[in-house]
Length: 287
Image (cartoon, rainbow, N blue to C red; front, side, top):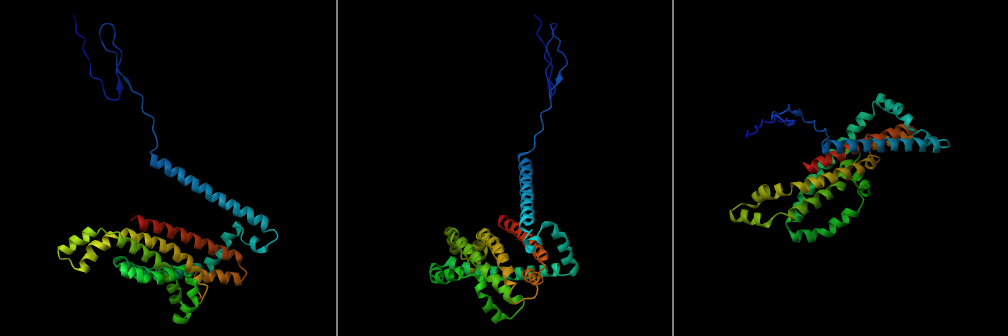
């Protein structure tokens, strides 16, 4: 009895049938698998599509509202979407939009830096000492609930007009998220690490540099992200007091000239910068 022989099957093919005489028919190629989008790519595409639909719906509602309500209201009629390009071009041509944006961002950055330095220092102090936290708690809670804009007359009286009072108001708003997040991070540091470092002879400054600060970096980043959003909200009304430049000032200037279309453009620029800052805050917190 003759023993049947087998032939190797190539990858990507299916075995052929065996004829009656024992010879194998040629192998047939296997069907190619269907291509599928990776889950991440498909999810990103769906998310971008949803965002685009939402943005178009918002513009459509804006257009519909201003078209209906603006029929008897010249202020709303000036805020129709088709007025935006001409108003934007007028602001750029007059040379005010870019310098005012730069001035606002400069004041924002100055106030944020002050808030980060002060907030990290306060957070380290109240986070490392329970006694300091209890002693400072009434003052901190009191200052937190007072609107930073309530300090505007005091800021103008102390620092005069210009960038200084605006930066002070921004710092007064942004310091508390940084301070409280830093304090929470210090309290969460593993005490065993500090004990080991103390046993090995590390000084207090060395423990702060090599253990505490690296451990609380995520909490500090979270506080900075929250401070960015708060400071931008406070900056615009702060620029309506005692300054002659900036996006907040430009809103008042457009209102006084009854240029409501230009005022709307400034509001849109403020919102666009706010979205960029929101994304930057997320990047800081996740980095």
